[in-house]
Length: 192
Image (cartoon, rainbow, N blue to C red; front, side):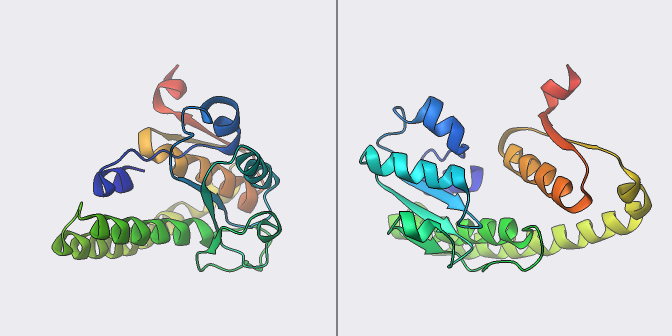
């Protein structure tokens, strides 16, 4: 969210389908809408696409699965390069989606001239370096806390601001991979 807002010089929001349908649709009627479903089969996303079409709102969809059901419901689908994962839960798609959105925002920002070619290169180099660092730190974290991780009976993820999307995804992935309850909170909610 913040990377896209800063480089595109416009407001970018990340909202769930339920939040959009129930609370934001009218306020965001004139926005450029990007609908995301890694699996391409998420029923809440398919419902959202049907509502967007019914309300004649412009949108396009991003999916990680070129064979997903989303193609049945929309002609505006772009597959972002992760393909359908073969394990029982999806893990590569989040990182691939973030990388795709960085590239997308960079390309659009360069074409709109809200960044220079130097800033474009700097953004890419920083994204590559950060990705490598995060992978290494994640690997180190798991090695260090391996026993504790697999002995947990529940997990709480705490984050703020733009990291709330990451916290949501972390809670989901922990639930899927470790088969334990995991929830996310904003730091103030957690402290309360």
